[in-house]
Length: 420
Image (cartoon, rainbow, N blue to C red; front, side, top):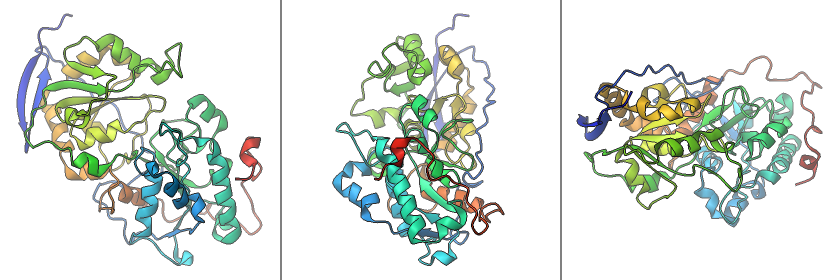
């Protein structure tokens, strides 16, 4: 059916004005996507306070595992994998920290495995397995707590593209699998995909790092009209790594470009303008498609700037799914339905769009996806603590019998077994 001209309807939402575009023959789109809860994810409400519900002991590792790397390359503080740095810093000053390991419910091993950057700023994970194995061996030799559980009451931040599989290409990450020594530990990792070899049950899925101060400085005045219907900036193809096409983003980004590059409702481009943050605040919908991994900082940026995230990543596991009502604030489009994206979005009733915008305007919603320094109640760091508190008390299978072992220290690719 040929659509008649799209009408612009201005709707005032709480403190801000939003410009919505709705087809004159709009049909209701049923939102049947349910965000997946991985056991151990964050609390039921954004305002949960984890203080008093758990105690965390932070291992004091030699600086070569963390702060020395940061001193050598300060870029590790600003890239999207910086979660490992800010969780460590926040724990050191947190009220949940205990200096007595005998009182601890959880043990944190601060290893900055992504702080090995190329000249272009991309983390190289090839030494990460050896680095992580070295840190675990040190912890097991110097303290008694690892050996009594083989890491089941320990947690690590592994913010690589595919977490503790430590590779940026999916097929190689899957072939590697999760580092064997981490298979009993709880992993705090960037959100991933259901039934995936690199997202173990019990993981706490978190947002990638996006700079809170930089985004706050670029906020537009309340009432700025949202005159753009759909906005996206980023790659549609990756000719360097996917020369034949179709593999990058499973073809979803290519489909966006091929179907909507000339559509007047879509402001999409590979250019990344200086006004990127401002442009998101002038848009109703912001596309958040998968790339090489299911996630990117766009989801965080969309939430912060009140632009309804359009998630295009089948089987995605979103951060803090028990705390953030993703189905209420976002739109989920199956990868195979990308060619119908214009029809899907123009068919959403105005009142549904307005409700999503009201929820996105909540300061609590924005705090939950950010890692400000110092940490603030309700922020992403506190949502991680909520996730750890939800896993207490530890079950019967956490602590091993005297002399019992489960993990194989010699498992894994031969290259991973070399000293670091």
